[in-house]
Length: 278
Image (cartoon, rainbow, N blue to C red; front, side):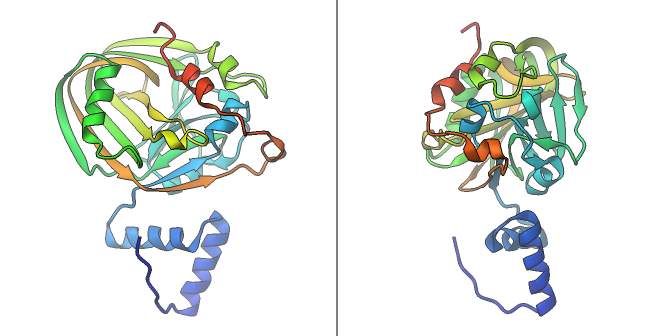
């Protein structure tokens, strides 16, 4: 990270202060975003709403509007109030995959409890002629990572001979993630074109993020999707980028402020993430 000192006209300075207040963002973040847009150089920064520990403890109420989320990223994943479905953010559009299997776009004023997004621009890519399983996908992405201590985003495009997904159902307020995962719907898609939206987080981030790989699927026709449990594919393109900056927007709800989030969430996260047949 580099530091700069410069003089600003009063009008620009006041506009900068106003944006910092409106977005509840630091000066560093607002200036970096503005320079990124002006210079045509994307910033690979994660923007996260709430924490994985809050999800594990059943804090699923709205914290940030979708419109604000999309100001910080065009690629990512998350969930909705009361775990009502899976979120995919792809090419700047937010989609909701419901437990019925229906896929729809999400309006900007909708509140969400948890999401992670970035502005995706591939720094590296490789075509793989065949991926026989989710484990093979993980191995392919592992070969493209050069560090275990920063965050990564992965976009996988191609023809999938099989994609197995799960979608959470809405649950009563306060239901823990482990209990909520027992009621998820599972889907099996065959011979479908689409995209995997993936994030990888280092193990040390487990108290606020989902450690390891986390992929959501969205078909090219925007009709099918969900959290990926397994997949097989031919001739897929895997692109990715590393991120060493993270901005976390914590909820201001009374429930979050009073919650005990000291319990290690990793076991419950692993239960919710895994293929229930494995």
